[in-house]
Amino acid sequence: MASVSVDEAMRRAVELAARGLGATSPNPVVGCLLLDADGEVVGEGFHAYAGGPHAEIVALAQAGTRARGGTAVVTLEPCDHTGRTGPCSHALIAAGVARVVVAVPDPNPVASGGAATLRAAGVQVTLGVRGAEAEAGNIAWLTSMRRGWPYLIWKYAATLDGRSAAADGTSMWITSEAARTDVHALRGTVDAVLAGVGTVLADDPRLTARNLRDGTLAIRQPLRVVVDSSGRTPADARVRDGAARTWVATAAEVGAGPDGRVDLTALLAELHHRGVRAALLEGGPTLAGAFLAAGLVDRIVGYVAPRLLGAGPTALLDAGVTTIADAIDLEITDVTRVGPDLRITALPRKREA
Image 1 (cartoon, rainbow, N blue to C red):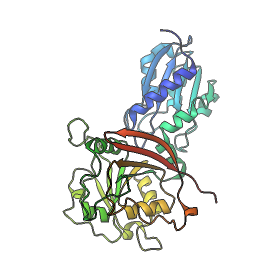
Image 2: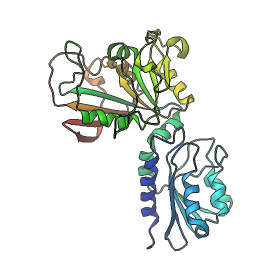
Image 3: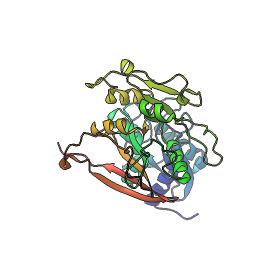
């Protein structure tokens, strides 16, 4: 096999890391390639599931003795602690790896320090190769670890004129089957799905993730979270059906904000404590407005159907905007056709203090 450059190897490692999305939490996604002394790929791996072998360990197992004197190319700084698995920094040293190339330093104080340990053992360490790409592929985990609450995605579905339901309240279905299938794929990448009690009372959703091939329940289900300030979720609501774990978060349990409703910052902090690194906010418009007004939404995914209603509920209510100067500006990062619908992905721009 021909030798590859470190840059090419890191690009491949980023691709490998993506295979673990939705399965590794509360751990990060990580990819690794091992090059021998001649630059030939002798091992590759990714972190496939929480508690399983880390990417470096999988790659080292493939490389065997050919790792000695070679280079490990890894998307995240090798861990330096013993948890459910041993420290990858020590494994790389024991294998005789001469150089380790890292895309992104580990922000987790419990696991960081691998680069320093490697250097102390005489291993050359290079940081920052394809760092932006690796950061983007691991953005939810990195963001969550750096600030202490989950990366929050607001997902909504609406007609071209911004309606989430007709005037009579009917909303089944605004978007196409293709768009709904896409939403299940999105649910499969997060650790929790959030909805307000108003949505539960009006639509009685299940909030589960289903298998894209046959519609059955996916093996891994995100935590279902009902934001319910006063505990109005019915005992027979479908979110309580046992298909997945459910937490009805009340103001009495989480804490109340000045408006008497669930304190959203405290809610996210508690979710982080429970191992949630990425969360999907699905409904409804009041809760979405509250999260946006508080500046707690990291990404917006909107499914826009080629339909017009002219009346009926909107996808978003009060988001703290009273004048055009206060509008929440967005950076559109992707527009994709999903069946007859458009999926628009955007990032809220940070407001200047």
